[in-house]
Image (cartoon, rainbow, N blue to C red; front, top):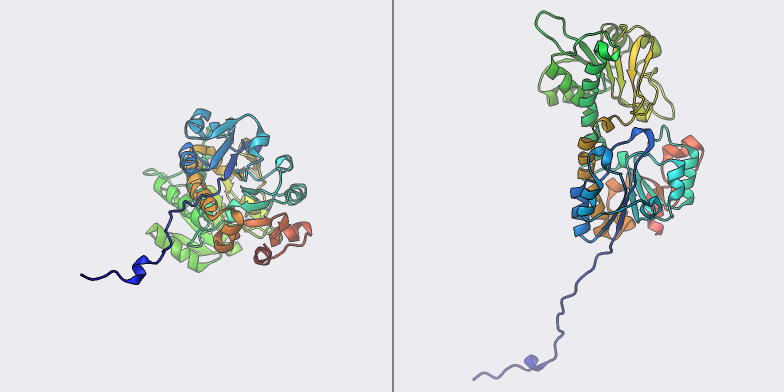
Length: 398
């Protein structure tokens, strides 16, 4: 019989199962009231996933009602619905849609993470200064990238904006909305309406799909031949495309019924693809929809407007230039946004907070414009004459 080896009698370390507890994170959902904003960042279904994972969600009463989500749906899925904005604005992470106002920024307790659209074109210095004094880390929704380098919020909202812009154009071409009484599209024996799209991007693509589906003649202009080529490949058909030549564009606009602008310009040095002279040459009763108004706009006569008052007429041409166009379809837009924000919230919680997350997530770093009260966005720095600092260097110091 073999004797047991001496090592069998030596003491050994006992392996004890250890449960790693993730830090619970509180998430605030305020009620967006400004500029006719009706979207909400998280749906009730998303709230349930987050609360089941150990997070707390505090929602201001009525925050989801305009998007078609009742308070009871949120409370049934684990959210704490409160009448106190101070409770919501005191959460670890505050996530909203519309850019912060000075009053909202003043409510913050300080040292938090806040996520919203930044909208550098309309950002006020008093709002920016207040956010910096509160020493928050602020992220711009429209600047956050995913692992593929895509801007998921911009992509999803651009799809909605592109389709909605064509539906709006169809509405405002009718006489009931002050238009010239033509149908967007084409019927047998009647000349089709002409739609000009500035920008071979996601918004332009979905606007073109919608217009072509209705039977309209579509012409697309862009500054890049490469983008125009990809644009045609995505649509799967040949259509009129042109690089940007003012004389060619001006000639095309004279016969256009609809102009959809989807190409941004430099906020600090604004110039316009469509000048006021070009607009004056358009047909009376035609429609202009500038989808890039939140980043400076590409039509000189376009003015930033709220969804509740988006329409005005200039040189006999109907203009629609609301920055938050997807708010016209708030439920669809909210679900699309929630599909982006819900996994992002969970990733931040799993990482142990925003700073650990920023260390390894380049796409999220791209969205930061204030870090711990320090401005990191060069565009805002130049706009207000404030020194901006490199985020990577700041992270190295934390």
